Length: 66
Image (cartoon, rainbow, N blue to C red):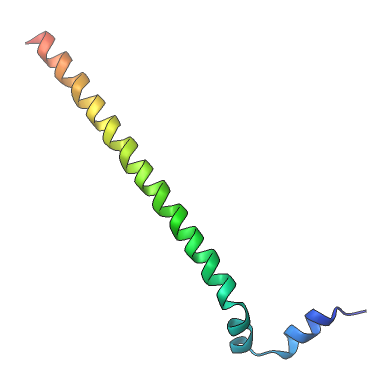
């Protein structure tokens, strides 16, 4: 026995399917974008701290040997 929703989707065109589900897709896309921005900001922050720490260490090592 075939599911009613599956039969209904089979009879719909791609445009109708897109119109029906575009709000949900847009919401998922916005959520993904927001999470990606948060992760990117944190990554940049952590890499900045790591670069600063490496620079300080190199400065200390060079300062000791010179």
